[in-house]
Length: 138
Image 1 (cartoon, one colour):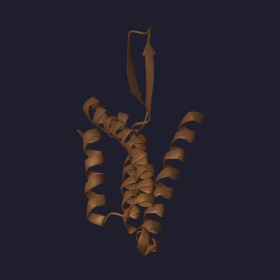
Image 2 (cartoon, rainbow, N blue to C red):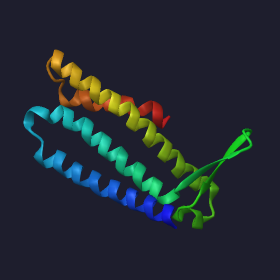
Image 3 (cartoon, rainbow, N blue to C red):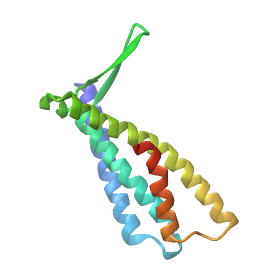
């Protein structure tokens, strides 16, 4: 019960804070940081989806004698009795975690790029973010 309380509290907090951040970035970003704001918006979007997917599946990865692992779903998705749907939601969790790590690296590279050169326009940043998300989605 304690793990469930902690898990659901963290997921709900993550969703709430990312919605607040999304609002702040959209309505209160300085004009000169709009291209960086696009990167933050992509990050918020993926974080909201990942936290919501984690809320639904609550996966537990269990090792079986160093030969295999199984994933057990403890979230509300288990009541659907559909292994395929649970696996798809869990795949979204893995996609979001991977995207987050790649996107954080891109954010650091973007800040370095802006120190050396002028800030790219919003279209280029959007295209780069879509390209960054493509490998994890595939």
